[in-house]
Length: 214
Image 1 (cartoon, rainbow, N blue to C red):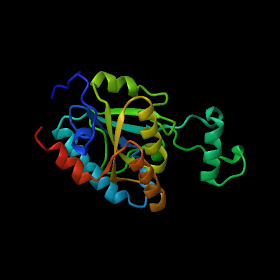
Image 2: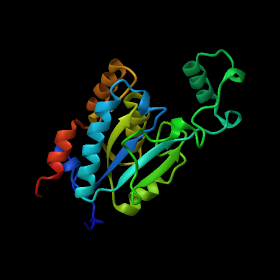
Image 3: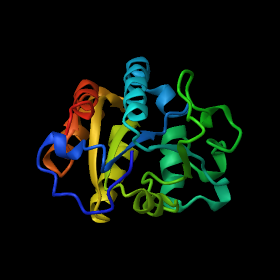
Image 4: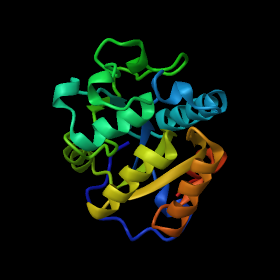
């Protein structure tokens, strides 16, 4: 499918956001140490597979994030504090390295893996636009809308949606192909996004809308 380089009209309805001429699918942190720890990982994976199939059928670019952390001595202060909370320690010296290259927690969860023509971007921040070539890749592809699924809704997905809007991109979040580490956190973030500029839809809506003739 050839992609139009002309600016498409401002999206107002779900079908406008999900126009295959403007969209890419983002698989957010579908790796053992993140998505693999979500309570609803099974249903998230099943719905993600449906989205991947729809993306292939409609020639949507697919972008995978992979969270790789720098060594602890190169980790920024706020994220050292975050890791300390996560690991429940009271001093940075007590932290155990995690999400390092080659570790099991950086491998994609069973049943999900990028295809050779997909784009895989390594990052260490909760926004996929920080220290990655995402912005350049989207401009080159003629994409202005990200359809996002994965884990965690209230961390990287919400961060990336906010950052995307600041850079002029639209976002759509697929609620039943996404999750957090509690239902409360997931729903709280979805409520914010609905009131923001991000439509929140389910997998069936994405697949059906992409299949509609234009």
